[in-house]
Amino acid sequence: MKKIFSLILVFFITFCSTASQFGTGVNITFDPRTIGMQIDDTIMQKNLNARLALAEKKYFISIQSEVLDGRIFLSGKVDEPEEKIRITKMAWETKGVRSVKNAITIKGQSNFKSTAKDILITSQLRTALIFNKNTKARNYTLETVNKNIYIFGIAMDADEKKEVINEANKIYDVEEVIPSIYLATELSRTKL
Image (cartoon, rainbow, N blue to C red):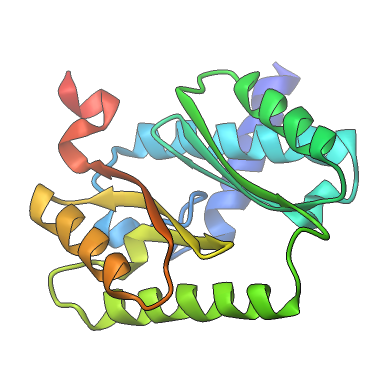
């Protein structure tokens, strides 16, 4: 009984502290997931983040995770390739996981110039999505690693998904666009 009460208390504190966003960084106003789906994703994300922090305190700051319909997206930097493998394994061990996308990079494999270019690419895409009336920029997490753009989020329809990918492909110096964009109708519990 104490575990259930603790879980409810943690959820309540998390919910109250993020009024405009709910766990996964997707704005609630545009989020087609049910409250139950959002709770499941938030619990998965908090569970993974806690396990990462317990495994290695530095992961709490250096690794970011997003969960959307049981799909985990990881980003950040680690010191060794083995750490990347270890984190991926921990993500796959999270209860309820459906897939894991890993955009974690190894420190030392990029320099200041490439990091600055990645930040510029991400900023350009974020700006393009904000100004594009056919997209809801808040529904997407963007990460650029070595000129490869990773897009993670929910599109309301196929046209929006296509528009987001087109905007990414327009950006100068992008090598590859790696979308993990799910249509609202593709979310697991909306198919029931």
